[in-house]
Length: 173
Image (cartoon, rainbow, N blue to C red; front, side, top):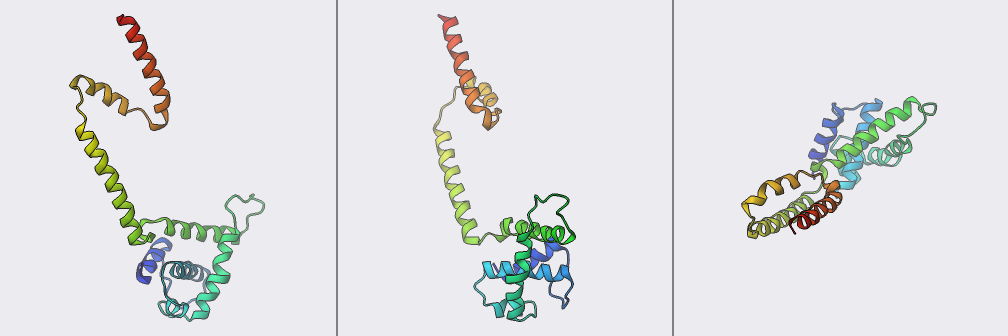
């Protein structure tokens, strides 16, 4: 992931540019998110990361060590009496950071490729297996009904279907 991609992600989430020379809290916090992600996702030195936003290495280091940790200090389950303006603001920026690192674009390309390859293999194997199965056309409506059962209800449905089959066998005897 490049610094340009990271900058685009951060600015997209924040809704404003972070490379302007300003000490406004929003800009400083936005840069802190950017610096933290760049440090985690690239092999660039602090000096190189800072240069991407016309900042020096000390600014990057200060943001990562002092500003970014203030986001993590404030927990989302605070009592209303404990919430202050700084807590709300810091929590907002921590949420933005978490959204960014959860996006597909944040995941390294080689990991995404590996995941997609694994999913492809599983689907391919399942498709081959399903292709080999010969299904009686009379059973198709029943199978389609069974496929509508929610995943979490399958164990219960399985028990009930077995009981119905047993009763039908008894009835036929």
